[in-house]
Length: 135
Image 1 (tube, rainbow, N blue to C red):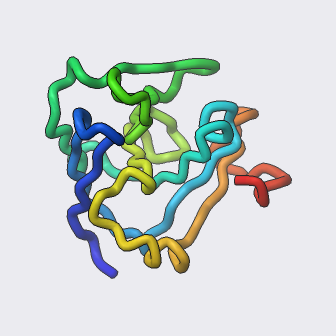
Image 2 (cartoon, rainbow, N blue to C red):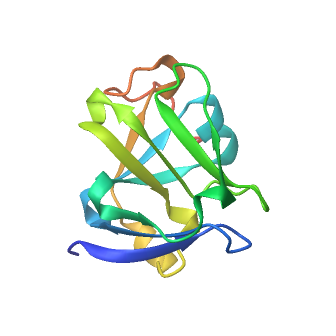
């Protein structure tokens, strides 16, 4: 598969975005306390390949711990459709789109999507945690 444009949104549709990426280039799962609780499964996107289509006022921001990431969620329905931040191990500035929030992704494509695991719980972004089966 090559890079293509995906459309994503929260549950109620107030937060909408487009992102260009190649699903076959890989996806990520993290064991930090937030990602583990919401079972966030993401795809990394360069900042120039992400476009917020809704009003910034509809999107809230949550940070915790080392505050390297901005976990963005809908003010109305609470869903976390994307995040962004700066982590050197990710190549600097990044966006991460929540694969569960992509409106035009056939779920069967996720079966073969490569997954990399990150030890966000220990801010060790370059290494996988010892246990990943629950992610």
